[in-house]
Length: 573
Image (cartoon, rainbow, N blue to C red; front, side):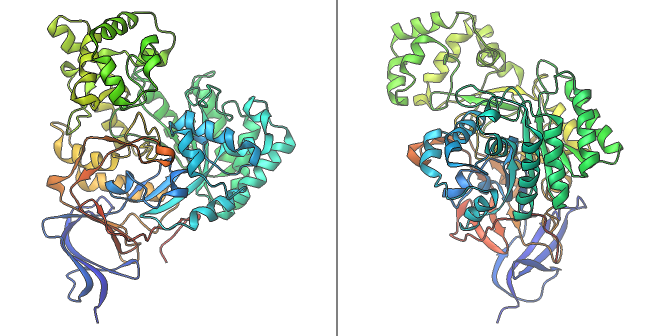
């Protein structure tokens, strides 16, 4: 008889606390870490980790698997990147609670805000729920390759209570606020990890309508926060433009909400290229909340936030041109053949000089912030490698450079176009943000923006780039592991994981750190109804372990699906 279910031998352990690396054996029994040190006993299964890095499983607190988790047991791409616990229901969007008449509205909201094909959601969602608790039950019924937690989304909650009036951004009545408060309490008791809301103009339905929570009153937000207080649990996730009328006014409201509810809070933070120093002001306001005794953090990203443009993606720099709109519905091969026609090329390039009508359209043609993504992808590309800089060197119109690049490589080329965190053409701002004690690593959006963004690979990039590959300003490996394990887990109330210590949940990664890297993204047409999504794999993960079971070996699934729905806060038992 073996002494343990699993023994990982001779690995170099980054235990999640930020302490120095140690060479240890790790023994696992009944889904938990049973012993550390020099293990003399035998395991039913053993992993030789000599020369390899052993870490806790990564905890991704900002994903959007709300639809995919109902039809798919493998939460890829995140599970390829060492994530063993994911939290979804962010940005105020999701699918519960919901009335039959409002299902289409929630699909349109998710499609618009998170770029998940509506046809895939229509086919994939079985809508076997109405209440948030019933939605959790539906999630609980499916085994998966990682643990999953869900938050109550404000958009769905508001539409459930107010119907059409929510979509029209009308103010909730006192009775409606009371209903939301009761439903928030019910959702927290059912197992929600928290509540999320959005107050940004960037979040719109696929029809262009603003997110229902955009103008929710302080009284409404307070009612929901008090519902969480009534339940005695749950975190608040908040997104805003912070420009109406000014950040200080909105943070004063947040101060009142947190003082009344006592709930932990996080807000998304990134560097805007139009206001490159503005993030410091917002982080200072978060620090001000913390100084008053509130549990307040900012979620930040470890690399630029940007879109991937290409013939396989949802957009290209010519998407607003009449000639391209006329062929946009065609297959990649068909569009590629048309775009190779010199006459079409001349016509489209002529149209591309016409005035643009929106800020979003302008983003698509910022040629000095367009970079060939490459393989392996470069997320901190030098300024001189931009397609705009290349055009100046060659004395050509940048539109021609972009056009030619798009039709090279059989239409599989991607242009990386960062629109946040890259104002100075480097990631120094990300380094500063990550090193603040008032931030969390997040914003990867796994499962979302499937035709434009592929940031679910953040966990791999966080370690490989910042601890190994960056030429200057590298960060300590053990500390980086802590940031994406113990810190994130604790921020959402999951204090039973994120650390390699006896009694903790046996969620682990065994990594060949020298070979760890992010692969180039590829478009796959594997969503329901043939929907497309960007998928990005990694190399270097020798094993990923969830609750003591090996789920992936060398990036390939083992067939084990030990992942569970996490209902509410968890502690070491």
